[in-house]
Image (tube, rainbow, N blue to C red):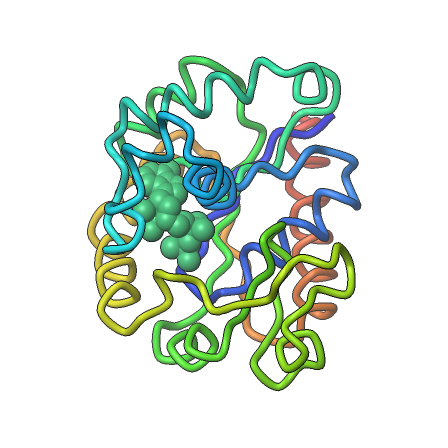
Length: 217
Ligand code: ADP
């Protein structure tokens, strides 16, 4: 079992890498962004509370996020196979709370410079199940996800204002959460520039090497 946290700014390719890593390590991919968007689409109590926050690109309060994540970590798949956390924690409060409720083997920072991500975000299209495409892809052009048949659209928070708000929150708040993992000796930074396959192999070798070394000590 493996318990990984994946950091990376918006458009770094974090979602794509998280699903590839989840398949590779056989650990459930837990994307808090996907979970919240699903809650909004289903109109659950949490969904109603967070809808406007998501659309503005702001952060959902820590207590709400903790409720959501605690619930998810209690599921059998996590107990048996660990997790690949994508989008949580995003504040130092969330980071500290997470380390109180579970062991984390490693936090990985998928590092892509801010200058590179803006174009990627404006051309990003997603389906309702979270599969990710770019505007020129057949899936985006036809508007139907080839994997699950749900509509492929631009996310409500991929507007310029909301993207700027999310990148600011990342710089101000998530950077501190990352620094906290670093202070605990748990942070590994991996260069996220390159095509998805290259980055994936780079990630797996860096993670395996680090976890092998940790195991030896
Ligand atoms: P991105 O990384 O592109 O911002 P996500 O899909 O990870 O997108 O998250 C979308 C939105 O969901 C965030 O902008 C925020 O409003 C909310 N959200 C997701 N995870 C968290 C979290 N851990 N804490 C606070 N808000 C969150």
